[in-house]
Image (cartoon, rainbow, N blue to C red; front, side, top):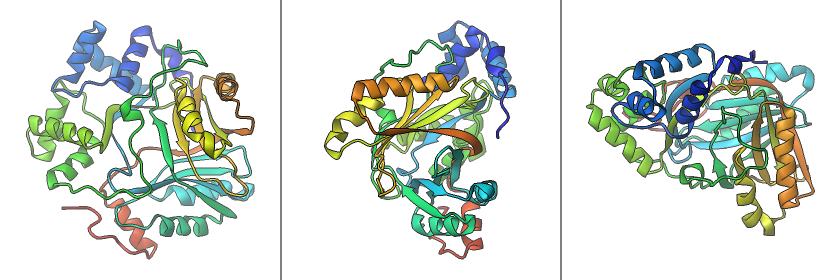
Length: 361
């Protein structure tokens, strides 16, 4: 299991306010750290120092563009697998080698291995999933793609002031359009180069976008214009911090899954998404052995906090048939990297058809 420490206890109130700002409302402008400093009443050097420190503590993973996988033309799905418990670590290791697997967890359920899978534009998600099913030795593999997205937006309240039953407005970038298949956008060479660059950690310099623009070979203003275009075209959901949940003090994460009748989905899905401590809320397919159509992810400092939020959702919606799946081991947690050569190498190594063009020039 990923090592965890009480690093959140090393943070002061300004650290926590800064981490909230980095997650919730990062300014995409020429001098973002100075803008944050003004907003929080700090010196820019202090903002740099605090960001450097929370990275060193392992609380902040990175600060980067967060793209919409499907809007970029990538196929994606949540996957649930039943694996022999005695061989689950080996199965997870095989699955983790796929460059499109960004999250992989062991959970307390007969479906005991849960991972997310993405494949490049033009590639077959089913073909990739067949390889992972076979090579991992899974007994059963269930594809659980998003049928409807009610909310996606991890915001860990570092101040600890959000109540278990608190409600919040679901913002536009937290409910992007999702279709089973989305056509890949036409991207210029500069746009592809920008995606490759801004998906990495933003430099801690006075003008970090100028630093990235120089690496791409474009001007700072051109880079900022491309980012604005990505957001307008809904390719990029936002620019924000990616946190290490456990080191930030959020030790528990629970996946509440709900058997919501089809006729009630339009009402109940958005209501579940409206709980502030629900970071992800989706409608997914059901199977004979899996009746749960709505998924809610909840993060808490401990199991009790997660249970309180799930209980509040149940009390408000009245859904009686549900299950709470706990993450008991984290095998992988990263971000999908788009337009890299890792995809080509994995596809060729597993004798699958290489989509063309996989990485535009």
